[in-house]
Length: 391
Image (cartoon, rainbow, N blue to C red; front, side):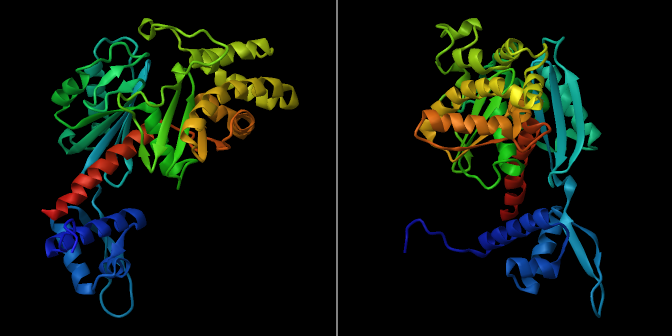
């Protein structure tokens, strides 16, 4: 007998069955005791005992009846939404957006606030979280986890922000201050990483355990998903492709002086706006310029080709190291470029490297960072709450 094999104690088996039933209720909606038994392979008696346990713990509730044949109608059960809440926060240089979801994933409250005129990041996050929870009808004490998406580096060891180019007031020590202020578990995560989590859940990377997401907007960034898990690197800097030394741009020698790094100079939103002016498009945002080039048909081809050539420098550098099967182009430019830009990048990468990843545009159109923050929080809280059935 293997030394690592654990006996299947009744307590452990009950916990596994309870967790399986809760997952089924989340995925398939209200179910009867009999249907839970059928789907889990449990007897009617065991399924009934399971439902009674979960109901006593406040994790499931009766939500209606299902008419059957002879005899009384069967009770329908669902996960009780108010058993726990989470808050996801998307923090940017100009605004913070917070949303509160119950344990089923239903978003019940959302707020948006400006961050332009404040030197108090703790106060900004506090107000956003409290208001989001309040608008969801949830007490702050029932919020089990808060996940904040932020640009920059997050230290994998401490969980604190170590460098945020666009958020100079966000600094080491902020995580502890927020946890003390809110008296709730708070987690920082890089915003592009959270976008990749959302893409894997409901976007262009569904069903993919290995892929990379390239974010092209005001900044450029990369998220790496390997084996279904985010890769952060030893210092949290995995994916900071703005710092790739690439041809066509000077390479700053001191990143602390806020000078734009090389790939950022070549492929960021400012560079795309400059390129658009060179091709005769009116001043405007980078996304608008890319959309205008696509709308122009053949006439917009030269500009799109150049954008793709520049993006391919970063994509190719990533792919020859990681060799992922899929690359997702996201951010305002990736979304605006759609298939027209993605196909050009795929062709260019194949032309200059030995790898041939499939390149596709993002499948998400609204708030991917916020969605990723909520998903990350929900996964952790479901493990905590559903795992508590072991006790």
